[in-house]
Image (tube, rainbow, N blue to C red; front, top):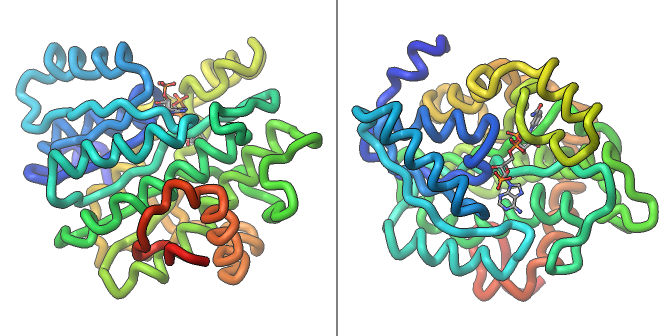
Length: 299
Ligand SMILES: NC(=O)c1ccc[n+]([C@@H]2O[C@H](COP(=O)([O-])OP(=O)(O)OC[C@H]3O[C@@H](n4cnc5c(N)ncnc54)[C@H](OP(=O)(O)O)[C@@H]3O)[C@@H](O)[C@H]2O)c1
């Protein structure tokens, strides 16, 4: 789908939740969705950056048909996710899309306030908790979608013994493990949600000039800034998924360059995905108050 077609797609009346929209490709995508007419719920940790988005759309896109609803939420603090999702519930009775795009890439081992390794929490636990808490709003939509941001970096196996890579942390190990997890979970959730006609997809944006490398030394930062494509280019596959009807997409698939792409053989093991979801549930059990289409309350 061309950029022109993507920008002209009509999302009027659609209610879309997105994470990771205060920067990079999420910012570009959220802007386009609001221009297309959607009411976009932005879960953001930084109020100053959220204010910049609102100013940007007001100043540079005064005729945008949609709008942003900013909701404070720090994915590295699990206790902030339930109240944020409650605010979404207070504002709408249904959602058409949940876009789980926020992510981190850390040079060094970093613990969140929950004492969990940050890549594992922000890239994997948080998006699954959000999906669990809001899935009942999504199934009320006529065209429901869950879209994750994965990555071409997803090689290896799931490290069930040590998913946080404690005492053997490496930037690549932790990051690609988190993205392999997302690809596996995309397939599992697609199967679970098929009876409810929810399309579940993940996408790789390519190498994009964003803030992802910013905290990893000047060399990584410069590589992202100089070698990456623009966030607008990087958001094209995500926009393809938001704009294309579920009937024309393959649920459970990984998309890159707006096409289904094969991934590593480890990322097709549905039993591994089921085991992974159980591991995630143990981390999240304090926040899982009731059963959902994703989780039984009791294991
Ligand atoms: N850039 C690439 O080449 C590339 C390639 C493959 C996949 N990806 C994936 O693309 C996604 C978007 O990343 P990007 O490249 O656009 O990087 P980015 O510019 O650094 O954007 C990351 C987004 O995630 C948000 N975020 C991070 N930690 C958070 C937290 N604790 N709570 C709430 N929000 C948080 C950031 O919020 P703040 O603005 O507050 O920091 C920002 O909005 C990520 O999942 C990344 O892994 C990127």
